[in-house]
Length: 136
Image 1 (cartoon, rainbow, N blue to C red):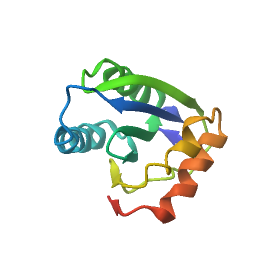
Image 2: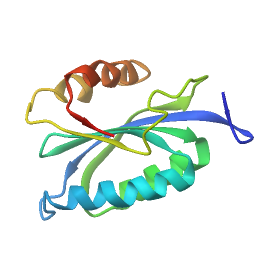
Image 3: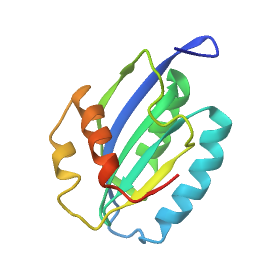
Image 4: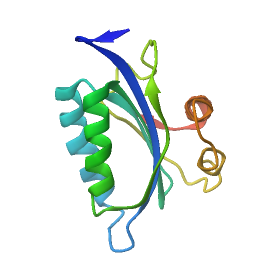
């Protein structure tokens, strides 16, 4: 699948909410990201368990990588770690969401993803979707 003249790219990362960041800042992250992602043709899903983030992003390579760099430098995040990134043939997994959001109070839910690397991480995130209360 092509996005403009570029191939489709996916990236999964985890991070922790910074010690001095408020949980309420997550709403700001979502609000701003939905607008920016829509403009940049980036879609995906953010899962937050009250302490840790896990996000799947998809779109044009340059847009996804630039967004990951912005997130990495965001002072509201700590311990930013890319679990998987690379081109894929599509279709998009979250085509209708500039950023779907799910808050979970299950502290163990993200644990299954944290130890993974590679494309199996994408499958693990997909496997969480039926268990999430999604807010597209």
